[in-house]
Length: 282
Ligand SMILES: CCCC/C=C/CC(=O)SCCNC(=O)CCNC(=O)[C@H](O)C(C)(C)COP(=O)(O)OP(=O)(O)OC[C@H]1O[C@@H](n2cnc3c(N)ncnc32)[C@H](O)[C@@H]1OP(=O)(O)O
Image 1 (tube, rainbow, N blue to C red):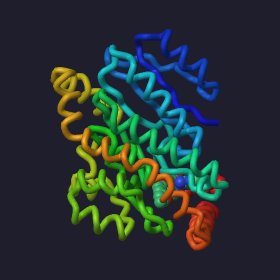
Image 2: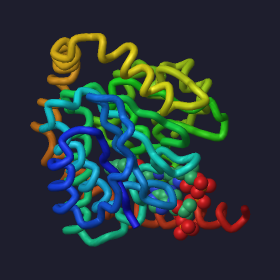
Image 3: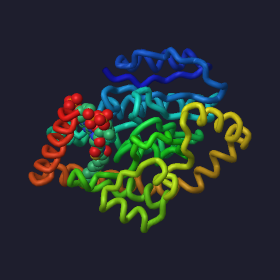
Image 4: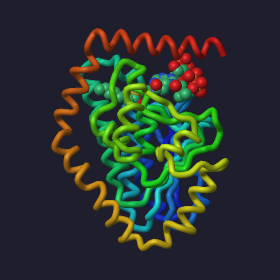
C-alpha cells in the first residue's frame, strides 16, 4: 500500500479535493502543524522506493501545496523507521519500454516539483537516503538528518552498474563541490551522518529531525520574508531548471536506451539478488 500523506491545518477543502482525485491516498490524519507549515509524509513500505505511482503521487501532493498560498514551508519526511527513501524502485527498471518512459517522466516531474518549489523545503531524514532518496533531499533547501550512524546518504548508482543522471550529479556538485562529488559518484559512496555533515551533504544532524525541522521552520525560516526566500531560490535554481527543461527529452531517451541494455539489465538483476540475499541473512 502506498501512502503519501498530505496534511496541514488550513485549506481542508483543497486537501479533500486532492484526496478524492488520488484514490491511493488513505490518510490526512495529522493536523498539528504550525500555520504555514505543511508536512509531506512518505509512507510506501517497506522502504519508500520511488515507483511510478509513488512518484506521481508525491508530485501531485506537491503541486496541490504549490497552489496553496497559505503554505510557505514544506517539511518532507518519512514515517518508515530508519528509512527516508531507498531511491528509485529498481523493479521499475526491468519494465517494458513504454512503462520505462512513463516512469522516468514521472521521476523528472518529481524533480521539477520539488527542486522548483517556490516554498521553502526542508528534508527531515530519520533514516537512509540512497540514490534518488538523496535526490529528494538535495532538491530541498535544507537537510536535517538523524545522528543515528546506521543511516546512510549518497549517490550509490555506480554500485548498481548505472550512473546518476546529469541533473542529479549536478545537484551533488552544487552541494558538496565538484571534486568531492566526482569521487563520491564513481565510488558510489554512501555517507554516515557525520561524514555527510563534514562534506556539506546535509546541513545539520539531530536526534529528532522532525522536531528540529519544525523548530527551524517556525523560529528561523518564517522570520525571513517569504518573498525574499522565494526570490533567492529563483536566483540559484532558475538556470538549472531552464537547462533541465531544454534537456528533458534527451534525458528521457538516454535513460531508456541505457537501462534497456542487456549488460545493464544483468547487473540490475544481480543487485536485486544481493539485496534479497542480504535480507535473508538477517
Ligand atoms: C541512467 C540511469 C539512472 C538511474 C538512476 C537511479 C537512481 C536510483 O535511485 S537507483 C536505486 C538505488 N537504491 C539503492 O541502491 C537502495 C537499495 N536498498 C538498500 O540499500 C536498503 O534496502 C535500504 C538501506 C534502503 C534499507 O535497508 P533495510 O535493511 O531496511 O531493508 P532491506 O531488507 O534491504 O529491503 C527491504 C525490501 O525492500 C527492497 N528494496 C530495497 N531497496 C529497493 C529499491 N530501491 N527498489 C526496489 N526494492 C527495494 C528489498 O529488495 C527488500 O525486498 P523484499 O522484502 O521483497 O525482499
